[in-house]
Image (cartoon, rainbow, N blue to C red; front, side, top):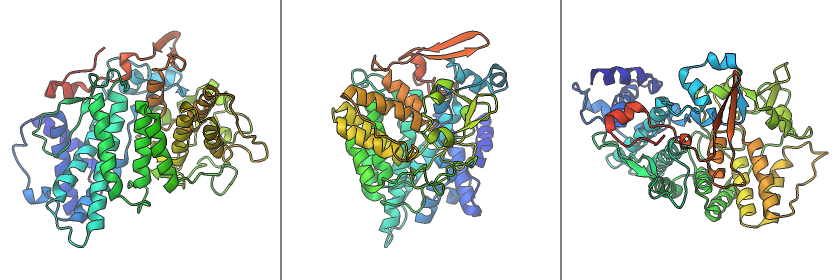
Length: 470
């Protein structure tokens, strides 16, 4: 147990950011608990801290826990294995072992950091839910609703992220048997961690979001808090990943009915194409803000795939807004919705939701509706004097156009890896990924078991839950 305490202490700085001493101690105690809970240890710390510090005293404490900025941090490796970029051999060799292995889809990648980060969020959400019934809510029903809705949303959001990295792609034929993730639904870390199925995982994500919907406002106080549009957007994502295009479309439309603003790349006040930080954080497209840590493709080492760069028309303003010339005929990405910070925006935004609607309409045979939705986006992205609305000759043609624009619009947003996984289930869109490093070619073929990263070995050793196959 001593080693675990040391690790907990190292992790404690995650929460020690608030000036209020009591809250810092509360959040520190939660951090101590979370590592033990995440690893499935059944013994509590030998020396318990003052119990009064580990019990939130009111709604303000609960909301404060949920407003901790680190809970809005997404996963790094969700970006690392994509086909959007490459690094040179020298730059690859200078990276951490985790990034080096993840870049080449090594089957033994051990990503404890992403796992730990999301289960801290889940534990914090569960702590808020468990303690909500013990605090006074008299005359503060709206605050209590926001606390509960926020906790449910954050839990669902973390479950969704973990599923994209540590579980196989949803397949209706096998989802009831395929291994999902541990669904921690309370803050009692003495309860053993067990893996659910992929079907159970998505069912819980959807249930949490549906339960959160009536509790959250249409417009949040800040965009780091969830809202009704955020719930609809994440439901649309989840259903899209499941291949339920009818429900994905329904939720995308419900989201857009509440939040449909788009940045106009022709408007210098909205998008400063002359700046090295062209798109501001919390801009009007953002529905719910999250960002990665300092992941590999966010660094200046990462160079945009040349074929992807060439796929943007010269009159497509994204070609200038998203990319900067390295001076050697290679390009780096500067178009994150995070104001130029090293961390990448991986949240929910109205452009993604519009593309979900467009894809679902195409798949459901609504060709005109698909093209209308796509053109609503593209007319804000192309030079105004040159844009000619896209058209499609068939549903297949419409789908191909939407997917091509989805890849270009959502670059570096954490959606490409889940997209590759789900599209690999369709032979016409299946893709073999390639890396060429020092003359050696590395491949990741469609539906390879490496699309589900190993559960971190530390977790396997302590819980004895089944590991992903190799």
